Image (cartoon, rainbow, N blue to C red):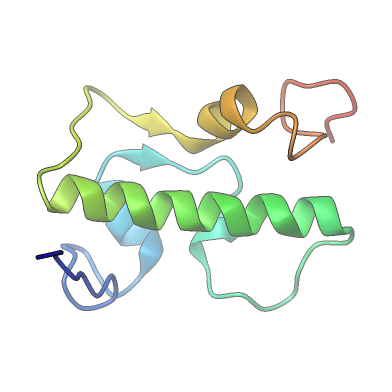
Length: 99
């Protein structure tokens, strides 16, 4: 049986993703990833990066809450995306062409 987590109701610090992220000790590279989608940045690559980072923050916070993932200190999603998705999201911080 799979555990279902409603990130706005079940996670400590909810309903705001920013407070959930802080409690789970996750640092967002782009703070816009923690706010409801609204005005997207110019360019598809920037919008995609924010969407991927938001999904990663939610997944990591849920995994930590479920006891499936632990880490020491603060986890930096920008570093994770740069290290693991540089080929899918060109212009990531630290990569050639980064904004």
